[in-house]
Length: 246
Image (cartoon, rainbow, N blue to C red; front, side, top):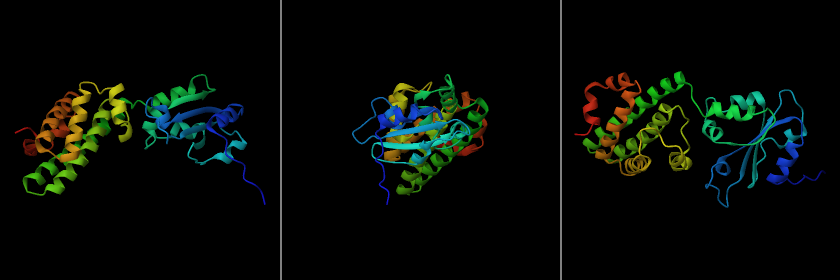
């Protein structure tokens, strides 16, 4: 019977990986890559990037998770594709480079994940904007017809789609809810007052207040039309009257 070796600490693993020539990059994501977000419960979420075709004993740690260390071991090509598209895109967009043996190549890969290209951003923003309008319309209509729970649920749904639309309009991946305030405080959305936007999102998602939804939509409509998405909104025809401030 073999005895399982104890998992090294984060610092010890970084030292071990940095000494392995197969490793071309180490990337830290999550709360420890977001200044001020670390707590006593925060682990180290680390990507270990290997040169294509390289062999290393570090692959034995692939998928390893402890309260201190969560590892993803992958090839350089797999790292380039991670989150493109996918849930991991924001995490990698704000990740911190711990080791870059590619002369800045790892950092450039992360920078590419942090910025949507113009065509991708325009196409996806239109879809999210339409989804936002749909949930908003349903919420206001349900409130009018006396379906209070449905109205609040639709309002909460609309906030999700709204945030996707606003960040995509700025060609950025939407942050996870945990990092929304962190992101907007440090990197505000152009044309938006961060405090007012967060207050509106809080009120709409928490109460479904129709007046707040309509005021917010008026701002969104102006932004969306300036960005060239008037056709998405015009497709709603007379229903826009229900969404706009009365």
